[in-house]
Image (tube, rainbow, N blue to C red; front, side):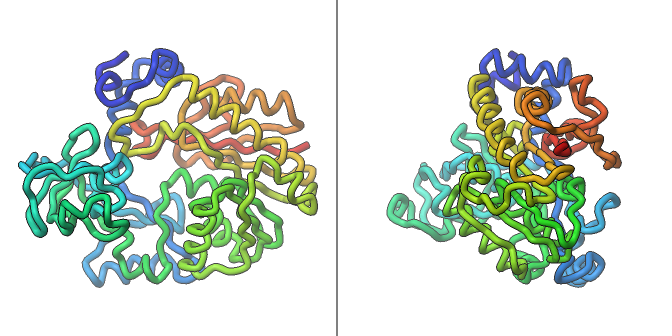
Length: 393
């Protein structure tokens, strides 16, 4: 294994070899890139409520400066500054992995993310926030009594004053609270654009939570498509509904369902759907910033097997010549090109050439090289991402 993998990425030899088949001698550059956030924090403007120019100008009047993306008319981004040194103080707040990866960009710490407090700090003392691997990610003011850990269920734990990286706190913006903004990566936005949704179409988002693609499709169709959003988790469905309300969108059918059985549970949709977007659970190896990770090659095989199960219902729901756009936030061949190969052998799908080529790279395997779209963190400064477009015949 390479050095960065030893310390931060506990991947077995099978998984490392799988990644090497994608990145070869650039594998260490890939690992170094996903440990850091990109230099741009992307946000989608909710063009149902306001145009991009208005939102950018509104924030600029308050000295909050966003830049317009040159590729997508609905996309803006904020610069990410850093890295900065974070001092290791005498009092430490150990937070879970997810919280640490938010704090590294300046987010505050809330009670559910706190694992333990070390030292003699009391309320309003300065503390260092560290990941479970004891890596410092932020520095701020303690807002809770250490003795209350395990008793409180919510509330602000640490108000962050400095972090490894610095950018705009999107969720604190008035424009966000008004429903004008949705934080979303550039490749995720491009996925919905590649789907090319049209008003009047019946469209399904099979794994919809947290709602980025569902709400983007709503925008692209001006709310005039018959849009269905499914997810298997009740809590995720509730959060999705909250996002739809925040963005002031209407007439989206949101249902709790296991999308592997949509063709059985929703027979009225069989053969009636024009377009489907499928972004299933995956190994998420392309997600960044990823401070550390632990996986085995068997996990990748299990994910690929799980993902395969979504294609039968997708095929059954689609009309003839219907379109399926498949995307993942991972980079392995097993979950991407290799899976596509199995799909076209099993079902009557053609892999279509993606015409959107303003950014991104071709596929890794020769048979799909000029058809699919890949994003590499160390090349494009985005999350690792994969997009394929299929047509039912």
